[in-house]
Length: 258
Ligand code: SF4
Ligand code: SF4
Ligand code: SF4
View: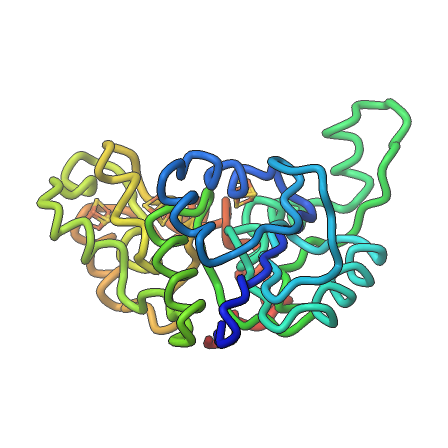
């Protein structure tokens, strides 16, 4: 985006239904964040500064939209911002909030509050693009700082940002990790959007699909892998539910292409 008058681009962070872990990630950036601050001014970042402003160029929205009030608030944010970035799995794909869809509101209330007074208004979890237009997506739970910096720099110079369209397995193979299927574990890597550098398999954990299902997953390839290692589609689906239930239940469109 243009910075012709040498003015800093004003960035604002907002959070909805989430744990704020993606914003917290940014506080670990240290020097890189300081470098970015030569070009941007952060005018809203609840975890770091107490100042607030409605005057911003880029809104970075974390969290799922669940309540009527959230809808109104995110629409107002969209009106104020030139660019809206969905930030993290909760915002991009509904993320773990989608698990709420497995239950009725009453069941969820009984599980979480166990007979206590239900103090919160709640609703159906939705990704941000289900309510307002999203310009760019930075996926993950939490987001990966390397990707966040790369995406922000690219957006700031007007090139935009497109997350990878290939699977996590590509990054995993490049790191020469031993495939977890060979260790009798069911991994979502073959059908999950890359961009995290195969974060979890590199530390011995399966990929749970936090960056969302690929637009064109190699479903037959995935089926072949499952068959080869003696797993069923149900076993795979159960794991994918953790982050992708919003999409699996078909209530939202896929994220719009940036
Ligand atoms: S995507 Fe994960 S880390 Fe980020 S806000 Fe949602 S639950 Fe927290
Ligand atoms: S461990 Fe997972 S991400 Fe890595 S190659 Fe195997 S299936 Fe793919
Ligand atoms: S490996 Fe999978 S679960 Fe882990 S960060 Fe990457 S996409 Fe998310």
